[in-house]
View 1 (tube, helix red, strand yellow):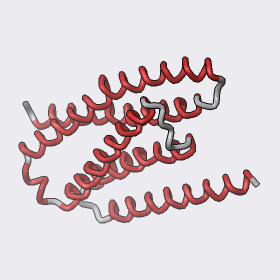
View 2 (tube, one colour):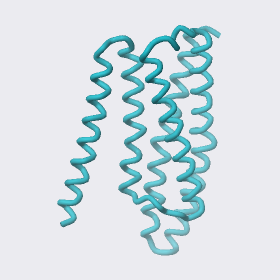
View 3 (cartoon, helix red, strand yellow):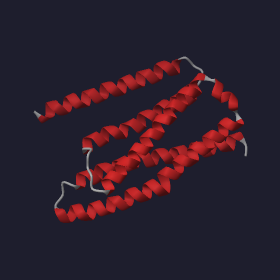
View 4 (cartoon, one colour):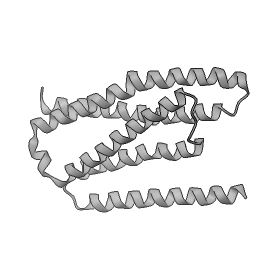
Length: 177
């Protein structure tokens, strides 16, 4: 298989993986908020969300993650010189963090399946942004590669994200008073 085909497959499954990660946390939010409904609605909604979460996770998200890793690894095997460049080391670090995010989401899903709601919908909304930050950082690393600007861009992006999150928390406290 050519390197270009491997890259195309890697990107296709990466997009599918991220779509699953974005949507699963959105389902967690809806599932958590359904607990505020009356008993009949809560029971019906919770049962439906459990089915949706399970199918999304095991039919789309996890297979897409596996295939993203398989095709990414295959690309590294075909072009081992990539392992000698700094940006790739940083990208692989983000991939390890993203895999951790994936398995934390899986753990959350299993808790929700057991009707254990330890995260609020607001906490889940913030959690959902972690995948967005990882996506932006990884894409910038790959596109900017050897340019020195990618370092400043990535650091700047995360600094902006932290500032926004702090601003949101301050606003929320102000609004609740």
